[in-house]
Image (cartoon, rainbow, N blue to C red; front, side, top):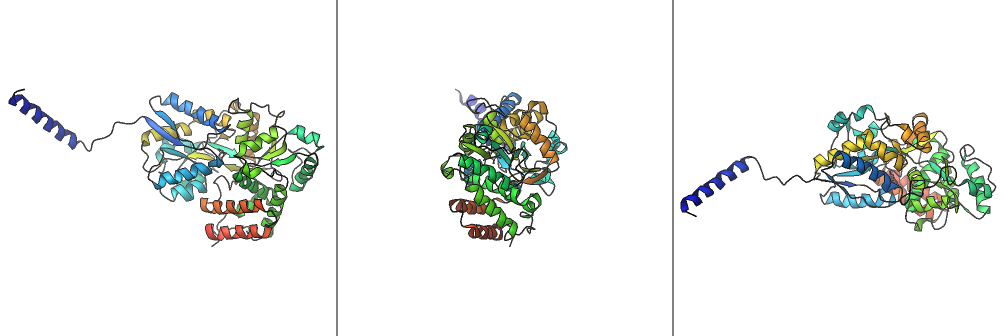
Length: 435
Ligand code: GAL
């Protein structure tokens, strides 16, 4: 190559480099993936996510969906992994967060997630979300997460055959207005040699605790535990009675509960005929009814049935799964596409019938849903709605964690009622609004 030619090439390269650098720093080629973090891995739970991902893949075929789900513990395991990643400045592109204090007092307060006003405007989500839900995902008028569903916590699944064999004539759908009526049925089941109420991994005891407290004290007093300051005294008689009832309920549970791996094992004890009842959120519906291999493919009313948990007729104890847009997402555009699907009617109509939940949106086609879910949708609008402790609605994570620790200690020794109540009082003082 002649010197002249070489000179021309070098000059060209210098000019090109100058033009490029004037356009800004070098940008990595757009990556076509979105990493979505949840805890929907287990039987019954993965189906719903897979159905929503299918809608996403249809609408955004060029973006690959990276499923970063972490199994177990109603999110306890996932949230621990997430906290480590957030501390290392390595957020997934979107993650599952419960509407309520879990989102607002945690991720929003720590400035880890971005407001979604634009997405709410472009998807029209504001006008199709229930009034109950908007304040739970908003701060200073800005929405911070996209709710995909409404789950019910206070459902009691049961096996009619076990009840009949034990001589229980009470109908769980109508005759358990009080916990005492439920205890009478449990005495019969216990005498027949079966477990009355199956219980799973440690977090399910907190799930049980909230529903027994509500069944014991009613909606207003439950709500009063979570106001700032609480209008229901943590040191008062309502909590004392609730604890006594919880101790009695625990006496009817399987002694190996805390060694079980998650909730599914306990729910399956009911459909297997080893236990009469299981109090678990309506994700259990998906597990019972969905097709194998993820679901048990059981027939409603025959293989399993459901009622509202004892003492909570007319009350809907709710939680809502939602997804956020992190500060510092690696693929913010793809994350926004994911959130757009999560917000959409198509996404929610694919997800919820398999998840056992109802849509967060109010305009889903009810004929896509099971009889169970259609009833839940009616109750959601007709009942008194209260918020779940275990699933992020009413208490900030630190407070919920210290209550959970107290529940665990009490489960190990249910004679320690005074100590348990003192621990609840202390939890509110240390991590809640009782300062
Ligand atoms: C809840 C979650 C539900 C379900 C459940 C059991 O916290 O909101 O969607 O996954 O845990 O894992």
